[in-house]
Image (cartoon, rainbow, N blue to C red; front, side, top):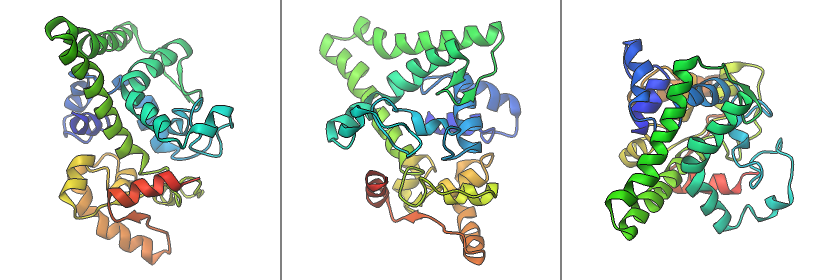
Length: 265
């Protein structure tokens, strides 16, 4: 689901723009497509790791400080504890992307106070609200209507938590790591390289489990290229980086990339 959804919203799923534009609305269970355009395509991809412009730096600001641009709060003293990470990551998509961020964006017409949102028309607003209602019903209400309480809890809570953790693992280890977190450049393409990290090249597991996000540098340089082509681009990108002395951030696999994330400051 995340693969086709992510590719379509980057207009890289198909050469037919209608397929790219409409298919994310078929199963809008990761986030609102309207919200994702603003957060991910406009905010994150254009201003990767730029303080007060990249909305992904402030997802858990009240509880976790992942970047120096985030104002320190007393709650941040506990952010390194395993239970805090587990809780934040397990509710990131179900509560964060799908509900909290959508409600705040509708009310304030901006995402995480850094990306102004274009107000949708009446049909767009109906789709936005309807999609969130459908998500709540399918994810949290319907299971208790058809299953026993135990099975319903597994469906509504455990499955969503596991999905959320998998999503967070595959997104946080690409930018919030030591060499990338505070890297800057006035050259847009150089900045895209410096603020991203690849991992697990050649690993079938890393490629399929991450949906091709393990080629993050290539994805940020060519966001409108389908993820299945990114491995073919990587050698050329790496050669160009070596030629012009631009660091090509790389981790050997998930273990190394996750370690880099937890150690970044």
